[in-house]
Image (tube, rainbow, N blue to C red; front, side):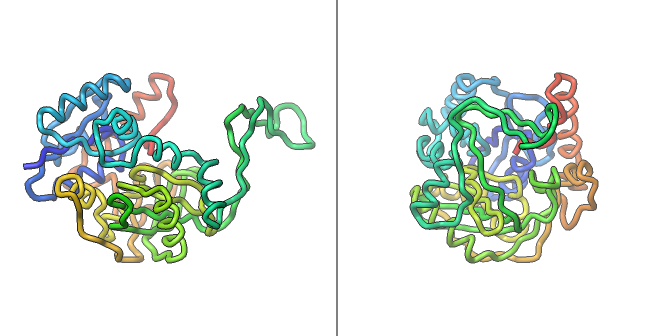
Length: 322
Protein backbone atom coordinates (compact mmCIF):
# COMPACT_ATOMS: atom_id res chain seq x y z
CA UNK A 1 0.00 0.00 0.00
CA UNK A 2 1.40 3.39 -1.02
CA UNK A 3 0.66 6.19 1.46
CA UNK A 4 0.81 9.51 -0.42
CA UNK A 5 0.66 12.98 1.12
CA UNK A 6 -0.52 15.88 -1.03
CA UNK A 7 0.90 19.06 0.59
CA UNK A 8 -0.33 22.61 -0.06
CA UNK A 9 -3.80 21.09 -0.31
CA UNK A 10 -5.58 24.43 -0.19
CA UNK A 11 -6.11 24.82 -3.93
CA UNK A 12 -7.91 23.17 -6.82
CA UNK A 13 -4.86 21.62 -8.46
CA UNK A 14 -4.19 19.77 -5.20
CA UNK A 15 -7.83 18.67 -5.24
CA UNK A 16 -7.37 17.33 -8.78
CA UNK A 17 -4.36 15.34 -7.54
CA UNK A 18 -6.34 13.95 -4.60
CA UNK A 19 -9.21 12.88 -6.87
CA UNK A 20 -6.78 11.23 -9.28
CA UNK A 21 -4.68 9.30 -6.76
CA UNK A 22 -7.74 8.27 -4.74
CA UNK A 23 -8.71 6.06 -7.70
CA UNK A 24 -5.27 4.44 -7.97
CA UNK A 25 -5.20 0.84 -6.65
CA UNK A 26 -3.28 0.19 -3.42
CA UNK A 27 -2.98 3.91 -2.68
CA UNK A 28 -4.03 5.91 0.36
CA UNK A 29 -4.16 9.68 -0.09
CA UNK A 30 -3.60 12.19 2.70
CA UNK A 31 -3.88 15.98 2.53
CA UNK A 32 -1.55 18.40 4.30
CA UNK A 33 -1.18 22.15 4.66
CA UNK A 34 -0.12 24.90 7.03
CA UNK A 35 -3.77 25.94 7.43
CA UNK A 36 -6.68 23.94 8.82
CA UNK A 37 -8.91 25.50 6.14
CA UNK A 38 -7.24 23.67 3.26
CA UNK A 39 -9.75 22.79 0.54
CA UNK A 40 -8.77 19.12 0.36
CA UNK A 41 -9.15 18.62 4.10
CA UNK A 42 -12.92 18.61 3.58
CA UNK A 43 -12.82 15.92 0.88
CA UNK A 44 -14.30 12.49 1.52
CA UNK A 45 -11.56 11.04 -0.70
CA UNK A 46 -8.65 11.49 1.71
CA UNK A 47 -7.61 9.11 4.48
CA UNK A 48 -6.42 11.85 6.83
CA UNK A 49 -5.02 15.36 7.18
CA UNK A 50 -1.68 16.65 8.48
CA UNK A 51 -0.72 20.18 9.42
CA UNK A 52 2.81 21.53 9.14
CA UNK A 53 4.37 24.81 10.22
CA UNK A 54 4.09 27.83 7.94
CA UNK A 55 7.84 28.16 7.33
CA UNK A 56 10.38 26.32 5.20
CA UNK A 57 12.33 24.84 8.12
CA UNK A 58 9.15 23.50 9.72
CA UNK A 59 8.00 22.08 6.39
CA UNK A 60 11.31 20.31 5.85
CA UNK A 61 11.38 18.80 9.34
CA UNK A 62 7.80 17.59 8.96
CA UNK A 63 8.45 16.10 5.50
CA UNK A 64 11.57 14.26 6.69
CA UNK A 65 9.64 12.74 9.58
CA UNK A 66 6.76 11.64 7.36
CA UNK A 67 9.16 9.99 4.94
CA UNK A 68 10.67 8.03 7.83
CA UNK A 69 7.14 6.88 8.64
CA UNK A 70 6.76 5.49 5.12
CA UNK A 71 4.79 8.28 3.43
CA UNK A 72 5.48 9.58 -0.09
CA UNK A 73 5.55 13.40 -0.29
CA UNK A 74 3.94 14.28 -3.62
CA UNK A 75 5.36 17.38 -5.42
CA UNK A 76 2.20 19.45 -5.52
CA UNK A 77 3.12 23.13 -5.64
CA UNK A 78 6.10 25.38 -4.97
CA UNK A 79 6.75 23.70 -1.61
CA UNK A 80 8.32 20.91 -3.64
CA UNK A 81 11.07 23.27 -4.82
CA UNK A 82 12.34 23.77 -1.28
CA UNK A 83 12.02 20.09 -0.46
CA UNK A 84 14.08 19.31 -3.58
CA UNK A 85 16.65 21.91 -2.50
CA UNK A 86 16.94 20.12 0.86
CA UNK A 87 17.29 16.74 -0.88
CA UNK A 88 14.08 15.41 0.66
CA UNK A 89 12.35 14.57 -2.63
CA UNK A 90 13.76 13.71 -6.06
CA UNK A 91 10.61 13.79 -8.22
CA UNK A 92 11.47 17.21 -9.68
CA UNK A 93 14.55 18.57 -11.49
CA UNK A 94 17.46 19.85 -9.38
CA UNK A 95 16.69 23.06 -7.51
CA UNK A 96 18.98 25.18 -9.69
CA UNK A 97 17.23 23.91 -12.82
CA UNK A 98 13.84 24.80 -11.34
CA UNK A 99 15.06 28.33 -10.59
CA UNK A 100 16.39 28.71 -14.14
CA UNK A 101 13.05 27.64 -15.60
CA UNK A 102 11.09 29.90 -13.25
CA UNK A 103 13.16 32.94 -14.31
CA UNK A 104 11.21 34.65 -17.12
CA UNK A 105 14.23 36.58 -18.34
CA UNK A 106 16.30 33.40 -18.48
CA UNK A 107 13.53 31.63 -20.42
CA UNK A 108 13.61 34.47 -22.96
CA UNK A 109 17.38 34.08 -23.35
CA UNK A 110 17.11 30.30 -23.74
CA UNK A 111 14.36 30.75 -26.34
CA UNK A 112 16.65 33.09 -28.28
CA UNK A 113 19.42 30.47 -28.07
CA UNK A 114 17.11 27.69 -29.32
CA UNK A 115 15.43 29.91 -31.95
CA UNK A 116 12.03 29.58 -30.29
CA UNK A 117 9.43 32.38 -30.51
CA UNK A 118 9.28 34.54 -27.38
CA UNK A 119 8.31 38.18 -26.80
CA UNK A 120 11.13 40.63 -26.24
CA UNK A 121 11.91 40.80 -22.52
CA UNK A 122 14.12 43.27 -20.68
CA UNK A 123 15.30 43.49 -17.08
CA UNK A 124 14.94 46.75 -15.18
CA UNK A 125 18.09 47.68 -13.26
CA UNK A 126 16.93 50.86 -11.50
CA UNK A 127 14.17 52.17 -9.27
CA UNK A 128 11.70 53.97 -11.48
CA UNK A 129 8.17 54.61 -12.57
CA UNK A 130 6.30 53.76 -15.77
CA UNK A 131 3.77 56.39 -16.76
CA UNK A 132 2.11 57.81 -19.88
CA UNK A 133 3.96 60.56 -21.70
CA UNK A 134 0.83 62.71 -21.30
CA UNK A 135 -1.41 62.70 -18.24
CA UNK A 136 -1.86 64.15 -14.81
CA UNK A 137 -1.34 63.06 -11.22
CA UNK A 138 -0.86 59.35 -10.68
CA UNK A 139 -2.98 58.33 -13.67
CA UNK A 140 -1.51 55.19 -15.27
CA UNK A 141 1.52 55.15 -12.98
CA UNK A 142 3.32 51.91 -12.07
CA UNK A 143 6.36 51.71 -9.81
CA UNK A 144 9.23 49.42 -10.83
CA UNK A 145 12.36 48.26 -9.04
CA UNK A 146 15.62 46.52 -9.94
CA UNK A 147 14.97 42.92 -10.94
CA UNK A 148 11.52 43.58 -12.44
CA UNK A 149 11.11 42.77 -16.10
CA UNK A 150 9.16 44.36 -18.91
CA UNK A 151 7.86 42.13 -21.69
CA UNK A 152 6.39 43.02 -25.06
CA UNK A 153 2.65 42.40 -25.05
CA UNK A 154 1.51 39.63 -27.39
CA UNK A 155 -2.03 39.17 -28.65
CA UNK A 156 -3.72 35.93 -29.65
CA UNK A 157 -4.93 32.67 -28.15
CA UNK A 158 -3.64 31.70 -24.71
CA UNK A 159 -2.48 28.08 -24.94
CA UNK A 160 -0.93 25.86 -22.30
CA UNK A 161 1.18 22.75 -22.85
CA UNK A 162 1.69 20.42 -19.90
CA UNK A 163 4.40 17.77 -20.04
CA UNK A 164 5.87 14.95 -17.95
CA UNK A 165 9.47 13.81 -18.32
CA UNK A 166 11.43 10.97 -16.78
CA UNK A 167 15.02 12.25 -16.58
CA UNK A 168 14.86 14.01 -19.95
CA UNK A 169 12.60 11.48 -21.71
CA UNK A 170 9.08 12.63 -22.61
CA UNK A 171 6.38 10.46 -21.08
CA UNK A 172 3.17 12.51 -21.43
CA UNK A 173 1.89 15.76 -22.89
CA UNK A 174 -1.36 17.70 -23.12
CA UNK A 175 -2.53 20.99 -24.66
CA UNK A 176 -5.44 23.30 -23.93
CA UNK A 177 -6.78 26.75 -24.78
CA UNK A 178 -8.10 29.30 -22.33
CA UNK A 179 -11.68 30.35 -23.11
CA UNK A 180 -12.31 32.65 -20.14
CA UNK A 181 -9.86 34.23 -17.70
CA UNK A 182 -10.00 36.25 -14.51
CA UNK A 183 -9.17 39.09 -14.79
CA UNK A 184 -10.67 39.22 -18.28
CA UNK A 185 -7.57 40.80 -19.88
CA UNK A 186 -5.28 38.00 -18.71
CA UNK A 187 -4.95 35.95 -15.55
CA UNK A 188 -6.11 32.63 -14.12
CA UNK A 189 -8.20 30.56 -16.53
CA UNK A 190 -11.74 29.82 -15.37
CA UNK A 191 -12.91 27.93 -18.49
CA UNK A 192 -10.62 26.03 -20.82
CA UNK A 193 -10.81 23.46 -23.65
CA UNK A 194 -8.56 20.57 -24.66
CA UNK A 195 -6.99 21.02 -28.10
CA UNK A 196 -4.17 19.77 -30.29
CA UNK A 197 -1.35 22.29 -30.68
CA UNK A 198 1.45 20.51 -32.57
CA UNK A 199 3.64 23.58 -33.02
CA UNK A 200 3.41 24.69 -29.39
CA UNK A 201 3.96 21.11 -28.22
CA UNK A 202 7.13 20.84 -30.30
CA UNK A 203 8.42 24.16 -28.93
CA UNK A 204 7.64 23.15 -25.34
CA UNK A 205 9.36 19.80 -25.74
CA UNK A 206 12.48 21.40 -27.22
CA UNK A 207 12.63 23.94 -24.40
CA UNK A 208 12.18 21.41 -21.58
CA UNK A 209 14.61 18.94 -23.16
CA UNK A 210 17.21 21.72 -23.03
CA UNK A 211 16.89 21.58 -19.23
CA UNK A 212 16.93 17.75 -19.19
CA UNK A 213 13.61 18.02 -17.38
CA UNK A 214 12.34 15.56 -14.79
CA UNK A 215 8.76 15.56 -13.53
CA UNK A 216 6.00 17.89 -14.66
CA UNK A 217 6.04 21.41 -16.10
CA UNK A 218 3.74 23.68 -18.04
CA UNK A 219 4.79 26.02 -20.85
CA UNK A 220 2.48 28.99 -21.39
CA UNK A 221 1.97 30.45 -24.87
CA UNK A 222 0.30 33.60 -26.15
CA UNK A 223 -0.22 34.09 -29.86
CA UNK A 224 2.25 31.26 -30.56
CA UNK A 225 4.98 32.82 -28.39
CA UNK A 226 6.48 31.27 -25.25
CA UNK A 227 5.53 33.55 -22.34
CA UNK A 228 6.82 31.59 -19.36
CA UNK A 229 7.36 28.18 -17.78
CA UNK A 230 5.60 26.94 -14.66
CA UNK A 231 8.03 24.32 -13.27
CA UNK A 232 5.26 22.53 -11.35
CA UNK A 233 1.66 21.37 -11.70
CA UNK A 234 -0.77 23.91 -13.13
CA UNK A 235 -4.28 25.14 -12.34
CA UNK A 236 -5.98 23.45 -15.31
CA UNK A 237 -4.77 19.99 -14.28
CA UNK A 238 -8.28 18.52 -13.98
CA UNK A 239 -8.91 19.14 -17.69
CA UNK A 240 -5.91 16.98 -18.60
CA UNK A 241 -7.18 14.18 -16.37
CA UNK A 242 -10.71 14.42 -17.80
CA UNK A 243 -9.25 14.31 -21.32
CA UNK A 244 -7.26 11.14 -20.69
CA UNK A 245 -3.83 12.28 -19.49
CA UNK A 246 -3.66 11.53 -15.78
CA UNK A 247 -0.44 13.35 -14.89
CA UNK A 248 -0.60 12.74 -11.10
CA UNK A 249 -0.99 8.99 -11.51
CA UNK A 250 1.76 8.84 -14.16
CA UNK A 251 4.15 10.81 -11.95
CA UNK A 252 3.38 8.59 -8.96
CA UNK A 253 4.17 5.57 -11.14
CA UNK A 254 7.58 7.10 -11.86
CA UNK A 255 8.12 7.77 -8.15
CA UNK A 256 7.11 4.27 -7.04
CA UNK A 257 8.12 2.07 -10.00
CA UNK A 258 10.81 4.12 -11.76
CA UNK A 259 8.83 4.72 -14.95
CA UNK A 260 5.31 5.03 -16.40
CA UNK A 261 3.53 4.39 -19.65
CA UNK A 262 3.78 7.00 -22.42
CA UNK A 263 0.61 9.01 -23.11
CA UNK A 264 0.76 11.32 -26.13
CA UNK A 265 -2.90 11.42 -27.22
CA UNK A 266 -6.09 12.70 -25.58
CA UNK A 267 -9.68 13.71 -26.23
CA UNK A 268 -10.08 17.16 -27.77
CA UNK A 269 -13.07 19.46 -27.32
CA UNK A 270 -13.38 18.63 -23.60
CA UNK A 271 -14.07 21.64 -21.37
CA UNK A 272 -13.81 22.16 -17.64
CA UNK A 273 -14.61 25.15 -15.47
CA UNK A 274 -13.46 26.49 -12.15
CA UNK A 275 -16.89 27.22 -10.70
CA UNK A 276 -15.74 29.63 -7.99
CA UNK A 277 -13.77 31.55 -10.62
CA UNK A 278 -16.78 31.64 -12.94
CA UNK A 279 -18.88 33.12 -10.14
CA UNK A 280 -16.28 35.83 -9.61
CA UNK A 281 -15.85 36.36 -13.35
CA UNK A 282 -19.66 36.36 -13.74
CA UNK A 283 -19.67 33.88 -16.61
CA UNK A 284 -21.56 30.64 -17.19
CA UNK A 285 -19.47 27.49 -16.55
CA UNK A 286 -18.97 24.97 -19.34
CA UNK A 287 -18.37 21.23 -19.03
CA UNK A 288 -17.34 19.58 -15.77
CA UNK A 289 -16.63 21.77 -12.76
CA UNK A 290 -13.29 20.95 -11.15
CA UNK A 291 -14.08 22.32 -7.69
CA UNK A 292 -17.72 21.23 -7.39
CA UNK A 293 -18.71 17.55 -7.29
CA UNK A 294 -22.10 16.46 -5.94
CA UNK A 295 -20.56 13.29 -4.50
CA UNK A 296 -17.89 15.35 -2.66
CA UNK A 297 -19.35 18.85 -2.11
CA UNK A 298 -17.47 20.15 0.95
CA UNK A 299 -14.15 21.11 -0.74
CA UNK A 300 -16.04 23.66 -2.87
CA UNK A 301 -17.18 25.49 0.25
CA UNK A 302 -13.79 24.97 1.86
CA UNK A 303 -12.11 27.25 -0.66
CA UNK A 304 -14.48 30.05 0.38
CA UNK A 305 -13.71 29.43 4.06
CA UNK A 306 -10.02 30.05 3.40
CA UNK A 307 -10.84 33.12 1.26
CA UNK A 308 -12.98 34.54 4.06
CA UNK A 309 -10.19 33.90 6.54
CA UNK A 310 -7.77 35.81 4.28
CA UNK A 311 -10.16 38.76 4.13
CA UNK A 312 -10.50 38.83 7.91
CA UNK A 313 -6.69 38.85 8.20
CA UNK A 314 -6.44 41.78 5.79
CA UNK A 315 -4.88 39.73 2.99
CA UNK A 316 -7.65 40.43 0.46
CA UNK A 317 -9.92 37.99 -1.37
CA UNK A 318 -7.63 35.19 -2.55
CA UNK A 319 -9.66 32.27 -3.86
CA UNK A 320 -7.15 30.12 -5.65
CA UNK A 321 -3.39 30.78 -5.43
CA UNK A 322 -2.24 28.62 -8.37
